[in-house]
Image (cartoon, rainbow, N blue to C red; front, side, top):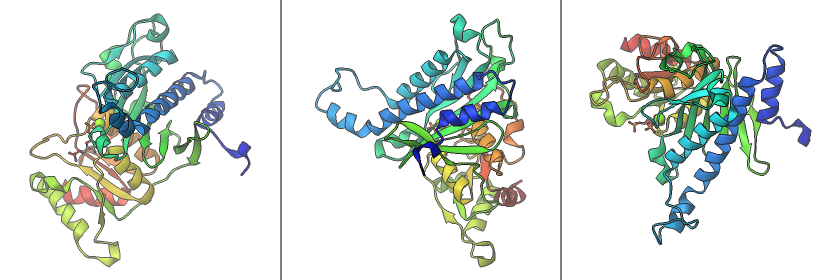
Length: 334
Ligand code: AHM
Ligand code: MG
């Protein structure tokens, strides 16, 4: 492959924009800024253990600053990048109680709002386990000459114009969709660019991996317990017993299952009666990607993307993955 065969994220975004002659480049610019923020967060994550070791001797890190928590850092980087883009008039983040409304005229008139989970699975970071960032982009529903309002952020997932995740794993990848398939880009650290590595990602119609926190087994609804037993039963005709894999980092669990085929489950339980995952920041963007890759995402009864959120931090039961596996689950549970 010559160096000219490399398709960077920015090249790809521009090529896609050319397919829409009336597009004005606003979404492209927004995606470009998200890619830049992801590289900044990645750089910080790659130094996480090192900073801690170097900082341990005193209360300050080598630069004389207090060590910032990484999830706080990621939140600030994404919000600043989105504001700087001028295309986004506000951000709802899992890290903040309320949406952040941009008031500077340059940003306030932006056409889009963004919902982010800046660092998902951050409890894993101290143990060098992969984490992720998740984002969704919606067209605002309020008038462009005013500031954004809560209605902009409480749209059903079917209204997303783009969604994606970044996985900070053994390599760093950005995976996104604008509703025309899913494409994955791997960060080449030698040139600092996300390069197209996984074009037109499709999930297999079935797989052999089930991902669930089985430590909560006794607290799950009976239907979910039945399905777990089904996964564990011996039946060579259907490839069972299935393989249990659970990282506890949504992006990583979903990314693996998307590539190999599988099912991810975060059901309601006695501790989390509505499940743990957040509809706006986690379930909606992941569902958009999964559906675009040929998979299915449901709360057990409803397609996730049809649910209208009542509040920013609303939780939802969440099941997603290969269509045949989800259909088996729904048949047994609901
Ligand atoms: P977070 O947003 O506070 O990081 O929590 C979300 C994470 C997901 O990445 C993961 O799927 C889930 O929590 C794991 O939860 P549990 O530890 O209950 O299995
Ligand atoms: Mg999260």
